[in-house]
Image (cartoon, rainbow, N blue to C red):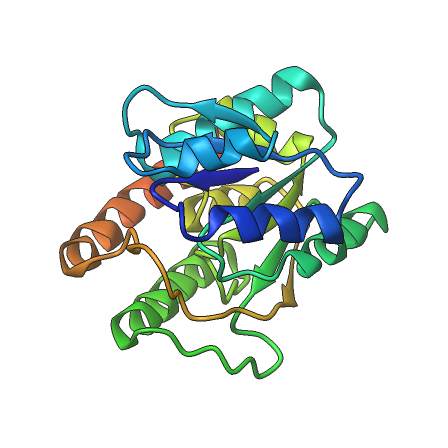
Length: 230
């Protein structure tokens, strides 16, 4: 599953890389109201896509795709950013870890096993803060809370769609942790973004942490309610 907004420069090589690396996997692009040629490129490639009539943002695009995956009966769902930073060859590794039975959610992490990826300074600081928040709330540290490459069982997705809106980052990890889902991080290779615009800006550097903190508190409350129902 690939959420995409104005990724015309990268969507084709990403999809072709997935075809080579995981030919047996179904692929779905959620086009978040792109204004460039993203949707046309996906159509020309013969790939499946859901085209949103208005921009919902990253979380909204994933919510749409997740609902589609659940209704279609998939057992495992993979999120992969369409900006070309991730290597499609890592996708089968994440799925294999789940199929081995050791985890419900597997995160492709930039910050384990001495990874060399640095990224913008402000984003690295934000990552560490979010990682600390998740550790304080759950007793377990997740180092790459905003990774755009994740694989998860359908059961893990059900608890998100049944609760308060999620952005599929630290708040989802906190909820999964508190509900007892097994989460693992495995190292992946990540490249610097070369095309398009990141969804993170100076404005989002202020708004995003506040929004994430609120969503995380709501997710923790949801988890507490769910645990006390059983």
